[in-house]
Length: 374
Image (cartoon, rainbow, N blue to C red; front, side, top):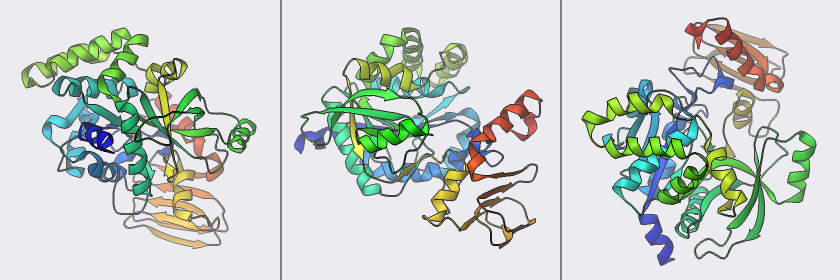
């Protein structure tokens, strides 16, 4: 236990707060991405909820947020405790490898033996105690030189998530549930997902990664040497305010855009360097409006979830989710699993079954040049 406690003292949390969340349009937009919304009805945005989960593990002085320049004011308003040195601003989105890699490169220069953990800003976790226990085990695994991830025990054969194929148990002090990762599996079809769940040796990939910062960067360098070279060049001047801006403008646009699953996790799994801790807590990445409806239904299929501070909804024999940002009265009669999102300049009407297709609307709007509603 003493080893784990010492490792936790070196732990630093990273919150990548990026991505538009195009499947949640027109609620989520470039200037108001989903992590800045309260999608649970708790009165707390997803970003603030993530911060509150991590403070007991890392402390509010050891959490770094990576976000876009345009979101700085909103992030700082949500997180007044966030240290100025711990907000990292991207000039444009470059996916998770650049965001997490830059944070790791900055932190390892400040603290060579630091252990970092990356946790997305837009996930929902209700069982905070079980989450913290899983992270503590992952930190112990990382202290042993592995790259660790936390996989979620599947509750259904979901086809919207990637899966982690678990292998042998690892004998790591402080991490009794740690297993070696055999492989990462892309989003499967329903039949394959059913086989995974029934087999019991696959977990959902929740995109949480914990490692020593130097180990993470070494692994990333093997597949993306130019990317890591650019990140380390940025990190070398990051704490110099005069040099930082010009360096970002010069280096950031040329960085490779690649997810950390491909630059770190998959190669690490192939070489036996990736371990997983099973997480038994409820988890959702709130990837579409069907997920929001499910969060609010509590297992009751006939419920209608209504979100919006001034929502005015009349419903009769209807279910699904209504999100209103206007003062319009919305009337629903005899419709099931409906999704209605009403904003000042755009209205979306679909069903839970078609919620994943909302992204195609965003793509069509981009092609037609109607960027004013994106």
